[in-house]
Length: 147
Length: 150
Image 1 (spheres, rainbow over the protein chains, first blue to last red):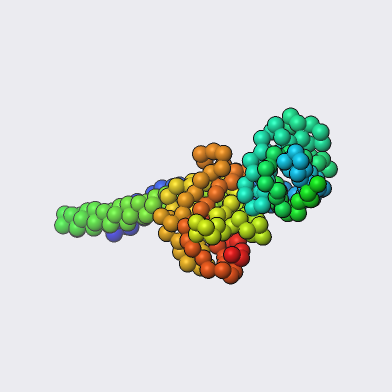
Image 2 (tube, chains in turn orange, cyan):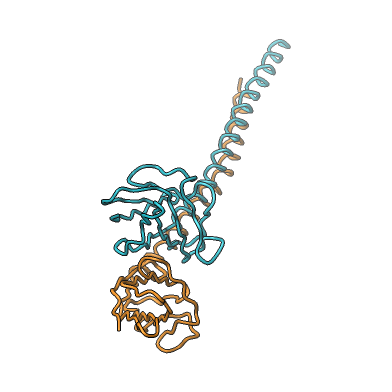
């Protein structure tokens, strides 16, 4: 009887060890993955909360058929010009690096706090409102002033 | 005396066999749980990294095209991962009703994949009466609702 109990206990113990050895890395990896994702999410939220933009002006030159939108980065996070979107009268207006300037510089993609992004678009129809959406999703809507 | 040893041997073999079966079942079950936990970790991480924002301008009148009976939405990927646009990853509810995938089309503006920062245009073929409406876009566990007037 003594040997049977010891033998069975030894086999069960080995089974438990193997089980624990399989389970531990999985639990550890799960915790690490979710913690990493949560950290990255917190950073994204921080950037979003530090983002603020303000329309300086949105003017339409009726003789030149040209729309100019100037938006100032009034937040604390640095934004990307290529990740900024412009909606003219609710429709997506694609702008390239060729018609954007950040504080007078046409080549940069960096839109730092305090700088003004100016977008110039040729638009044959007179728009009434524009919406500018920054990379983190913070948006601003403004009426267009016709000159 | 010999019969006692034989019966003890039989008992020993039986006990060890039962213990081995139990251990085997335990190891298999734990292996299954580990596999599921691993997949779940990947899913949860992807879910946390997913974020979208409806950027359409509801006051511009461009959300509903009454001529074609079409609701047009612009949705921006504000998360940290590329979202699949095929299949049933993106779901749309119009006034609380489920819209089957055959009723809407999704195209990425200026690209093929919906990378972070990119915008997709979702066109839902549905005629609406004049009044207030709401449309909800669901991506993974992320939902965004836009209210507009036709």
